[in-house]
Length: 561
Image (tube, rainbow, N blue to C red):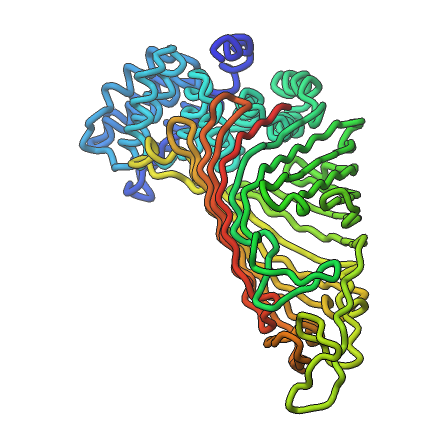
């Protein structure tokens, strides 16, 4: 990474020094010779007369150290780093400095030391400035540059992105340019392109913009990407069964064998087919499947194929439309066909993370028909016996389960989600390297051919991901969904073998909670291992849908792009 920085050294000096701010002098009189001297000193700084600026203020009682600070900043603007460091060293410990100015002295010492290639000393000075200096953007910029030089792309990129958001006037296009290099080094091509595009938007005809354009052309958005995982997991409720017997292929399901071990795998990839200005598009595909140890009849295979068209509306806003077709098999029998169309808009705020708004439409075509439960003789109470005896309970007369439980249909939904990198306090940044939080809300309406599945739903989700030392990350996710069905269920609450059951007149209603936790360890830049636990609880007023589920597993993950 040091070689990359040296390659671009011809343009770094002339711009970085222009991002240095000027110290202020709080608490001074608002009129008179002192104010006039301060104003004149700042004019001297703007024209590069550093020694004259220093002499104007040094003769005023109580401003000696501040004069040194101002002179040091001025010399940094002029690229006179040894002289700047000398001024700033003399300003250290000055009693006339506020705590913020103490931090500014250390910050600009770090800047000078960085340009003198004394990187370990620069890092120590920046650490001292943290929490004191008011120049948060400059602090983030130089911390990111030092991390980038050390090859720590995962820490450099967020720091440089933060510098760009906090004060683009002072740090751009430098911050975004080097953020792009860091994202490249971290194999984050999409984020690298976004950073380089910001540089072009800001400095299209300048030296930075021209260099960024070259790198953008060599960093395709999706020349290709492939990612996936393989693993083994234990599921204690493979069938998602509640407490009521269900009939499949004429046979009643029982409790036996609904928990099982299985191998799982998934892979997805994409290729960009074109990129023209702000427009780009490509194709995507995926395949997910599993193989059970005992319940081989439930082995699932689900390939998909689709495409996308994206448009960049600005340096921080991207719109995309996507279509995907999927076909699933259970064992060797066709099970489901899906069509999904999604329209999304993503915007990255200067300091507040990224917001995504989504509208989508879903069409489901199930390739099987629900079984028809034998009708009872009717009459009662008391509940009459089935005639003839069928080995399970029988349904009320006239209930057509085959028609009412048909899940084919379409869904329409809208969602909003937001994710945000939380600043890590300096006291714990050696323990918690990065914290990202996120959450969202989704509303959906699903209209099924059978009345059993027509419903509205409200889904809330939240999550947190923490990056730890040794390339370890910990993530937790939580979601809550309320499904408000428009009709009663054709499943009963109570069954007695060979007896006709009754049905409730109340509409079906469900509350689903999912909690997940995952620990992941990177083995290389492209391969990691992880362990995951997931708990699902579906609380329904119909016992057939009242169940919970625990899944625990281990996985080998890969990603190439």
